[in-house]
Length: 274
Image 1 (cartoon, rainbow, N blue to C red):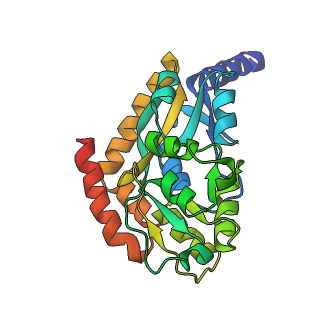
Image 2: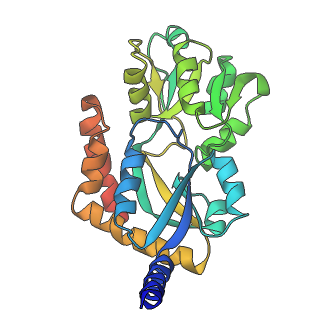
């Protein structure tokens, strides 16, 4: 009798274990980072996937991409798509939405200009002509055109960092005048100003090749199981656009000074999705 009950329990446990598909999900955010829009949106998606065990690991983008080639059932959070990545990964609908990149001058560099440079400008030309040092995240793609501009710069005009916390280190270096210029999303720069309690007013300008907004995606290494997962994620994200969860989640992390701008960009984002 006891043996029979035990067999049933083991059978149910076996079926339960088989029901959930495990995926490793890499994130380039630091493991101890405070709550962010990306983390909040991923939590929203994950909570609607009860049939999946999403095992989170933390690694830089470059390392995550390498590890994805060595493992089965692997995804990467908040990844920007490009043609090469799309050959290797299935990309979800947008998981995150950021106001477009701008070039920010350090306090010292800002003092060299009576007003923000006329924009948009050619990044390589501006940095070279003004003998500036730009901070670059080695593992980050800034978009095809801007990546090309960066490749034109001489080594002495670039300060390159990599790793999980490179973004915050770069922000600190900008405010401390250890680099002259940094490319970053407007909302992210504003977050670091608040986090680091910075009072400096930085001059900024638009750069040729920078779009009005940038989207991050959940990308899964191509396989039949990955395609099924991405299709389910897309349904969840589509619903979040319709019921405004996507917009309201993002709005929690938008400073009041940028709310109107974000609202306009969000409407543009929705129109391009249709």
